[in-house]
Image (cartoon, rainbow, N blue to C red; front, side, top):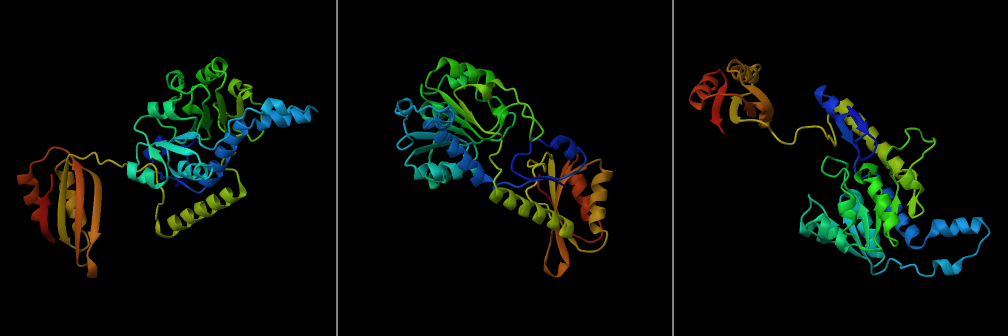
Amino acid sequence: MVIRAGAGFDTIDVSHCSKKGIYVCNCPGKNSVAVAELTVGLMIAIDRRIAEGNQLLKEGKWAKAAFADCLGLKGRTIGLLGIGNVGKEVAKRCLAFDMKVLAWDVFLTKETIEGMGATKVETVEELAKESDILSIHVPAVKETIGMINKKFLSLLKPEAVIINAARGNLVVEEDVIEHLDKVKGFWYGADVFQNEPAKKEAPFDNKLAKHPKVVGSHHVGASTKEAETAIGIEAVRMVKEYGAVKKVNNCVNLASDIKSTHCISVKYVSNVGTLDKILGALSKNGLKVEELKNEVFKDRMACVAEIHFTGETKKEELVPQIAGLEGIMDVTFVC
C-alpha cells in the first residue's frame, strides 16, 4: 500500500501501482482548512496589495495614496471552480466576508451546493463571466489540465482575479502571462506553479512567478502544524488498519466501473471448496472473473456470491453446470 500524505496523488505512478496490485491511498480533507486559509490570504493580499506595500516600507517609502483604490471583498462575487473539501472551506470563509459565492462542480447537485451557501452554475464559462474572483479547486486530471487557457481567460471581467492553490498544470502559464500584460486590472495569485523544484530549497526561475501582478507562495497551502498533524494521524491510522485487518481506506486506484459482460448470483452451502468449484466452472468455460462479492448469512451456513465476468457463454449451458455442483442451493443468471 502506498499512502499519499495529502489529497492530491498526481506525484504517484498510479498506473504502475495498479498493474502491480498495489493500493494507492490518500488522506483527503485533512489539510482543507489550511489550503482554504491560504486561498483567502492570497485574495486579501492581492486586493489590498499587501506584498507591494510591505516592499515599499522596506525600501523606506511611504505611499498611502497608491493603495487608496482597493476594491475590498464585501459584496463581490467569488466563483469556485470545484467545491469539494477545500472549496467548501473557502466558501465558508467568503460567506463570512459577505461575498456572493458561485460554484461549478461536476459531482455535486444544486441542492448540495446550495446547502453550503453557494449558488450552482452549470458551466465553467458562466462561472468565468460572473466571477470577480475565481478560485481553482479541481484535481489535475485529463479533463482539467490546462483548462485555464486563453479561451477561458477571455471570458473574465476586466478586473478579475484568479487564485490557484490546487495544481500548477491546471493553467497554461504562457496564456496567463499574456493576459496579465494585456489586461491592466487582472491579477493572479498562486501557491502552485509548473516545474516546481523537488527540493525544499532550490533556484526557481519561473516567468509567471516573477510577474509584477502575481502574488505567490511556495506550495505551502497544506503546510501548517495543524494540517501536518492531522494528516500524520490519518496516515498512521490507515497503516495500522491495513496491517491488522487488511482494511484499505481512501483507495484511489480500484476500478469504479465493472467491465463485465455477464453476472450470476449463486447461493451455496458454506462448505470448504464450494466457491472454488463455482469459480472453476467459470474457468473451464473460458470465462474471466472481473469482480466478486461474497455475502455470508448469520450462523455461516449459507453464502451468496455475485460474480461479474467476461466471455462468451450461454445461459442454458452455464446455469445447469453450476447448479449441478455439490452444495449449490440456487443459481440466477442476472445478465
